[in-house]
Image (cartoon, rainbow, N blue to C red):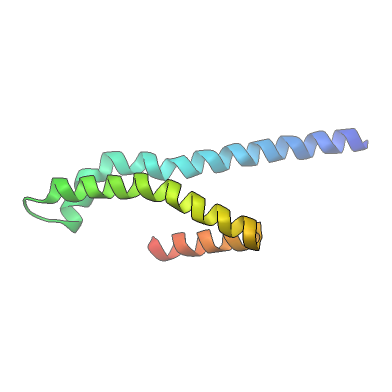
Length: 95
């Protein structure tokens, strides 16, 4: 196998990996919308369930860009591996 063929294979795998990461990243935001009333009822039972669901949606929409900025800074400052490990640890603790 030539070096050029090897690079094409690596590029192809990198593009597929990036695409799958993007799809899985957007999946959680897409999932929050249909289950918003259930989350509101779970965390804020009674007359405030709609408000609880709305606050869940707002927290998701605000938390994504804020987390991106913070984790991007950590990744640039301390290295991408530390940023990734911090993100995975935070996600694991919140789930």
